[in-house]
Length: 129
Image 1 (cartoon, helix red, strand yellow):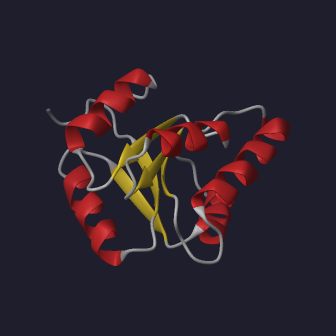
Image 2: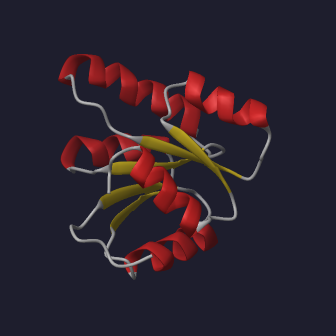
């Protein structure tokens, strides 16, 4: 994996500070620009003011979880007619979780711990890089 040709802006929605730091450090060195939201409501506020190429969305968070946030984003997209790629992040690795993520409107799903190779594969699949 090499540095990106063009910067990719990521909104990381994750309540765990250790996971935030790990993902931030891993992605920063490849040229990603990362903005962090601690929960879904904060993510919705950041989306009002910022432009992102991708959202990395933890599923289990206080205040507003990842599934609820994804549904809210997809509702807004019915008006804006713009699609924001969302990749779900979860500690669970059950096939049913992937199906659940996709059924709520996520584009892809990844299990924790965060796997950089899998992340790049997903970005290619979603035509982000």
